[in-house]
Length: 232
Image (cartoon, rainbow, N blue to C red; front, side, top):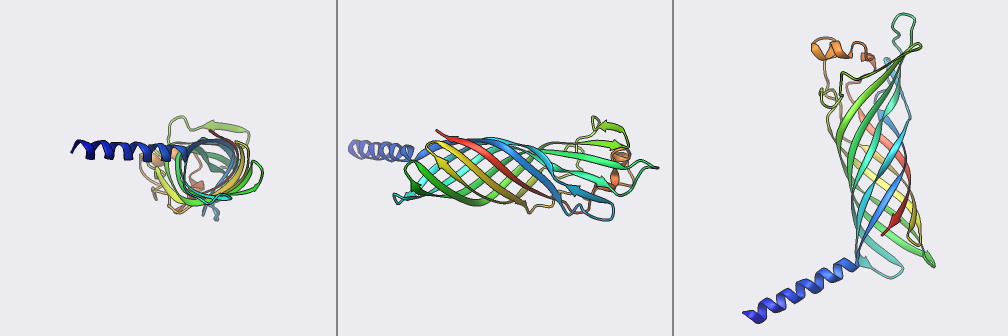
């Protein structure tokens, strides 16, 4: 029995050591451009909102063919989403414009393929699902020359938008030595709109001054990003 235990322990140690050799960590940060799909209607038009994306991924190589490697890449990222919204319904003679900022923690779970193209140079492509959890959501509304911030409302906490999001993630890039340049796109499949009644109730009174016409019955996140990274 002792010999079996010792052999099993040794095998586990060797397998963990071999797996550790195939593990690396990647830090990425950069620009993210976001929009809210399905907002465009007779009441509002959505435009690109610039923001930040940054986080870390674990890269586990499970197939190594020399010139090509396949790996699993789960990650955790801070992701600034949302949109710039122009309401087609003015308040009096003042046009309403909204900057809707939705901050998320994103968890992409990707399969990555990396190909050696020259000494110390690789190109990579990846794809997979992502999960998102909304941290906070705010509006900054401009009416004519007057600007107001949404200090009294959180679009997630007040249940205007669903905190949970999920969708598809695709990406590609180049790696030289340990430095990486990547770009990608996320297509939100989850409808994050809660379908809140904007014409009655306590919440509607809060939103009255926050451009109610810029909310849609169905809303999906959509964003692309360009990042720089380093592999440890």
